Image 1 (cartoon, helix red, strand yellow):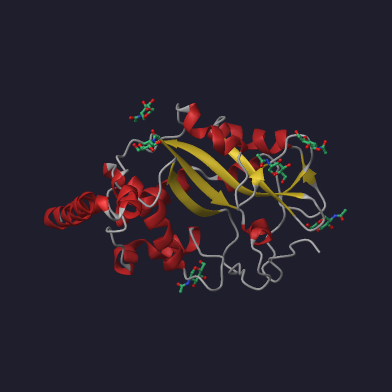
Image 2: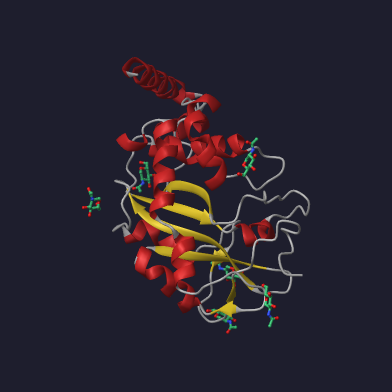
Length: 260
Ligand SMILES: *[C@@H]1O[C@H](CO)[C@@H](O)[C@H](O)[C@H]1NC(C)=O
Ligand SMILES: *[C@@H]1O[C@H](CO)[C@@H](O)[C@H](O)[C@H]1NC(C)=O
Ligand SMILES: *[C@@H]1O[C@H](CO)[C@@H](O)[C@H](O)[C@H]1NC(C)=O
Ligand SMILES: *[C@@H]1O[C@H](CO)[C@@H](O)[C@H](O)[C@H]1NC(C)=O
Ligand SMILES: *[C@@H]1O[C@H](CO)[C@@H](O)[C@H](O)[C@H]1NC(C)=O
Ligand SMILES: *[C@@H]1O[C@H](CO)[C@@H](O)[C@H](O)[C@H]1NC(C)=O
């Protein structure tokens, strides 16, 4: 194990060093290689709601919600303001063998053309390699294990049910009702993200939970998190506070039209 870790460190440093050596003629490559210093302090633990996930996917036929998926699923655990930290840190399917049953259930790919492992691999390279500078996320296995632990800790399905928030096509909710339902579990450490359906209705699609570098709920660095409160992304926009919001049921047959 120790020698394995050493070899990872060695491979990474080798890439960093060659990045430095190549600076003169390949600056565009090397600067992205050497700018990572584990200086982030906050993470976003992002969950997605399968009921409206397919609304954000342009291609009509590419989405699929497997029958066994009935709850909020994981999108990822993302250090804020850093990504793609180390292309030299490989992940293999066998790394996740032990976790795979749980990962498939809680962190499935909802895109037909992307396997579950491909999704995990993409998340590892984009975000995990940055989180990997912290001890309890310091390998692909540890990173994914930590994410699964967070998912269990933040049982949002249960919190919503307790507050009487049920997926529905014909009932919508006030922002404050949705936010209030999660307050007991998450305090004020989260953002709701919405997407508009083809009838211009706001549908709740994601939940971004603030987590500190030591993987506890909440993060003090307000400025790092600010953009997550306001910025539109390809996965939607912050849910508006002045209009009602739909929490669509999961429609396995017609994932792209949950309510038509
Ligand atoms: C970390 O350092 C990089 C490069 O020095 C900088 O671009 C980035 O903004 C820093 N991130 C934080 C969260 O301070
Ligand atoms: C991917 O995850 C889904 C949802 O849990 C599951 O139904 C499917 O069998 C998994 N795919 C593979 C290839 O394991
Ligand atoms: C509301 O939708 C649910 C399914 O989401 C349905 O069972 C129920 O009959 C609907 N109620 C009304 C009043 O349309
Ligand atoms: C985790 O980090 C936060 C913010 O830096 C700190 O307030 C908290 O005490 C830490 N918790 C543990 C268990 O180390
Ligand atoms: C985000 O999107 C909403 C509508 O979807 C739009 O009204 C708003 O101006 C956008 N905000 C930014 C900062 O782009
Ligand atoms: C809600 O507020 C936003 C800007 O804060 C505005 O663009 C939008 O039209 C408002 N929507 C309603 C339904 O009042």
